[in-house]
Structure formats: structure tokens, C-alpha cells
Image 1: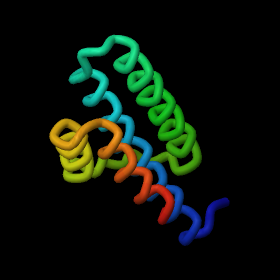
Image 2 (image 1 turned 60 degrees about the vertical axis):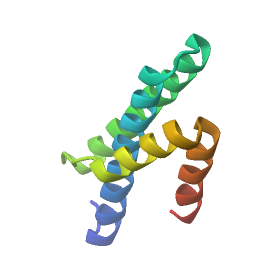
Image 3 (image 1 turned 90 degrees about the vertical axis):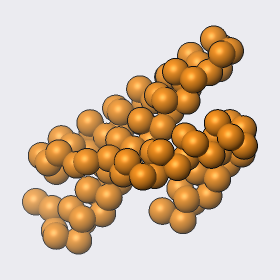
Image 4 (image 1 turned 45 degrees about the vertical axis):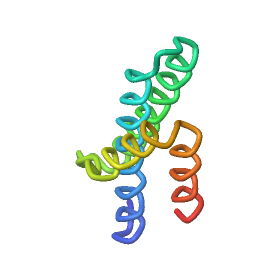
Length: 95
């Protein structure tokens, strides 16, 4: 049985995973280099698997953070993939 606090934290992690799945998938679709696109798509699938794991525990559907998905996709396309991903990693460190 999950306590309310633990469930809240898991739901936040679940939301983060589905959001990152969307970010990596969008970046993969925009990538011209097929090898980089394949790597990003693999990461996207991994993030979705993480989300699905958390969903099994919570038995709840969570909406992705669409603003975050838009922001990091836009930053990565405007300032470069490396910059966007590094910026996204900074947020993961604080999580």
C-alpha cells in the first residue's frame, strides 16, 4: 500500500517520464541525422517504459507537462540539441 506522500512523488515521476518521452520523440522526428534520430527514439521508448512502470504502481493516468515538452523541444531546436538536453538534465538533478 502506498502512502499519500509516496504516491504523490511517484505520480510526479510518472508525469516527468511521459513528458520526457514526448520531448525525445519530437526531437527524434526533427533530427536529420538518422543515427541520432534512432538514439533519441530509443531514449523516448525507455522513458515510456519508465512511465508505464510507475503507472502500474499508481493505477492512474497522468497528463504530460505540455508546456515543459514544448519548451525543451523549442530550446533544443533553437539553441542546439546538446544545450537543450543539458538544460533538461539540470532539472533532473534537482528532482
